[in-house]
Length: 357
Image 1: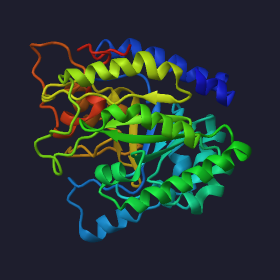
Image 2: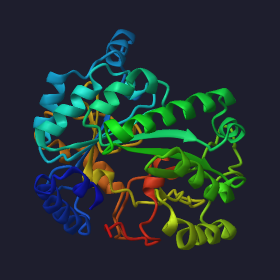
Image 3: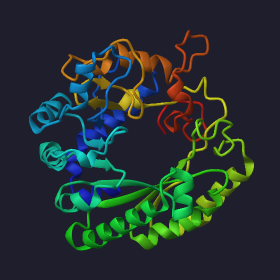
Image 4: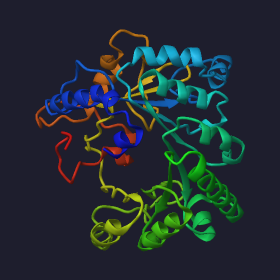
């Protein structure tokens, strides 16, 4: 409820709450075809789909595509149920989009939609004025660590980069107190088997910076760490006990909104707990749609946002056939490799049921 109170848009949120109630009821029935619309929009404006056999010129054109205001207006008209938008990108930073904050402001004017931007932070200085004067709800910065040596270990970037990012975040926090106190700034830090006990220090560091929230991310890098010795798995009892201690002692007294790191299971080849295909539509610059907010999953054909009932297109039904099916005798599709290490594919509250709690 904090976001509803913060924005003062409870009545604008009422359709979303009613839609969510239907979503919870229907998702427990494991339906492959749904009679409601997505609640959340994930925009990856500079991504391309590697499985499509595009020519070099076509791929280059796609990579250079721009999500302008007219295209964005058309996009919102196709998904009027949307109330939250996340701008993120693996290939380039959303802050590189010239029209980003015009789009954010338009979405807010359109139906009170609140936007989140995930940024690496390198363009904070040049876009600081735009950030503070816009209707942006939440800015997420994956800082990675709370001191230079840990920053290098987690990101493999020069330690001086940590100092530069920290200084820009401090300046943004200082200015937002007077210019846009409603803006939430959150950090993301990575933890592994070697530094998870430093989470209380990371929380204190973030509190001293003056940010609003901190999300912990489990370290997972099969390239740098092929044996996965650094990954926090759910069967490591000291880690489980430490996180429980964090929940009962550290989190209740913190000034921040804190998300503890999800513990991955060692074998997720049969995990079918992701709910993205029941609530999210992900869109790229070419208005291709996907039911996954984190990966470009391989599928023969991609639907467009203007397709009638795109929320039940073959890709969505394929994803729902993979996830959230509880009938053991049912013949199932194989779980994609990308899903087998994704934190969004973990059981809710330790339960094997995919129903929302």
